[in-house]
Length: 344
View 1: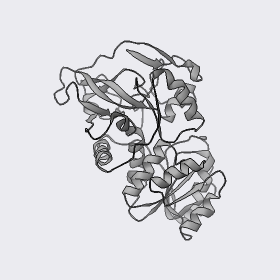
View 2: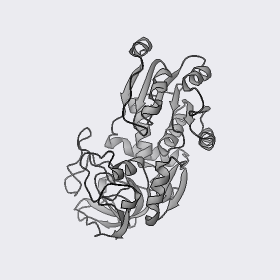
View 3: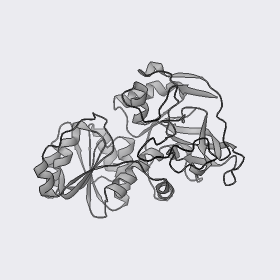
View 4: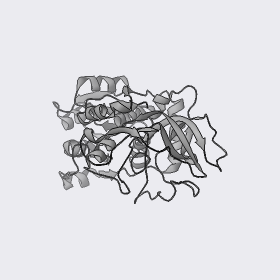
């Protein structure tokens, strides 16, 4: 098969399209012919060598979000058939013995992730456990399905399982043009929350408004804390959903209301942050919470909600295997609204 692969860390020049052996399934695996795969920020970070997940190894084929058509099934697979249109749960938690990808399910240790610690979707074929593929209904395109796994599961887990967001509460979501925040905005609106969204360009703010954000702010020119206090009549946000990291950490803390929860699930702008005021935290009874990984049982309900809930799969652009390098450069420069897709 053809794949975009890299054998050393570095800039986009280390990515090469080449022939590699087709993946061979174990007894409880399937091989999926990739219809579409979505880029994620981790693809860039690991390629650069800035950060790698435990268990990462070179050479590597990235691509965590994969949808396609089942091409091969393992000898003991009886609930998936060749020709099924599927989306893959990339987390390798809960993989049964009989899969070549079993034994990598430690949620808070060396958690395996398709496209992050094993080969992923920047290729014509992708190996997955048969237990980790879900039917894509005829009403959903493979391209739309590929926007779902990492963004929607991270956002759903962070907002509801960790952040305990409830109907009627107010949530502040940064980086509104990113795939993760686009998912978070829609999920929060769907759950009956009021969404405040920030971004660095007007087109990203316009997209957030179109997705249901009640109030928006350019975080490069506006005062985030003063704006949040103004639009909430002084109460502050019940939840802040942040994956920007250092750049917006301090205003995220001070934007919290009484009992507010700051959920952090990323570090795009840097990994070091200082808690600006312990006094503010204890007087507000506020919390800073690490998102952590989602559990296997969260995937199916989230997928059903995506398929039936009228969510918008925001796709910035589509490229082929040869265009992955340019697409990753655009992601590094934050020149993206929605998901970048690879169609092998």
